[in-house]
Amino acid sequence: MKKRKTYDGSFKVMVVMEYMEGKTSLKDIACKYQVHPNQIKNWKTLFMKRASCILEDRRQFRREIRMAR
Image: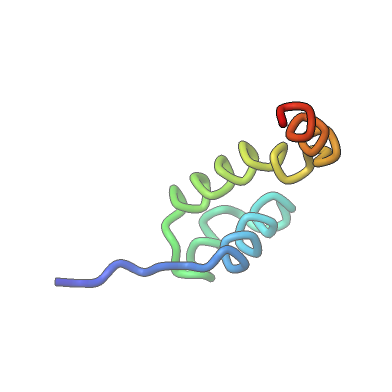
């Protein structure tokens, strides 16, 4: 049985950023990195959903924790 490939986060970001630049087609990027086009779309969707968490102002979160104590 064939083992599934795993990719680290830096690889996924590199592929998604290249796709989001729009200079190369999805099909070409998928061939270049040996990844299915749907997988690249899924990574992009996940990236976009979690971007707000990364860019969130952590100071507000810290204030809420202090007030809860």
